[in-house]
Image 1 (cartoon, rainbow, N blue to C red):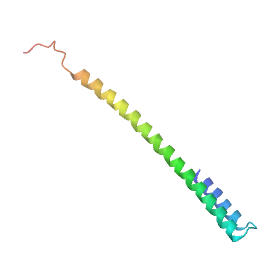
Image 2: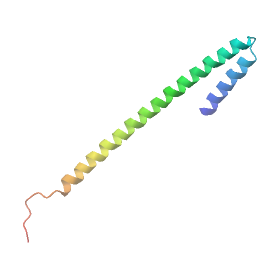
Image 3: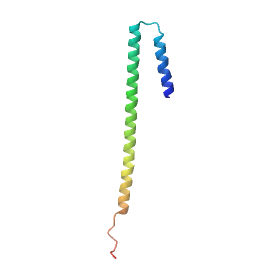
Image 4: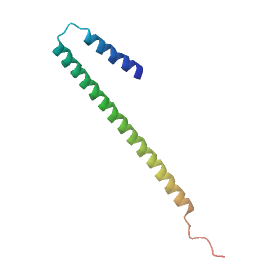
Length: 83
């Protein structure tokens, strides 16, 4: 997937450089595309970070429930007699 995106970006870049536009138009176009790419990267990063947060929360829930189960299983019931 990364190779595809790299190739796509490279193709856009080469296409822009060889397009019949003035230097200013080319620079503006490159700036706009770079900003779009940065926005997309930020969005993907945020999505990934949120996914990790959800995963960590799920793991914490499971471990908390497991710890409660162990705690309950090892708690004295009060019915034992002292020897």
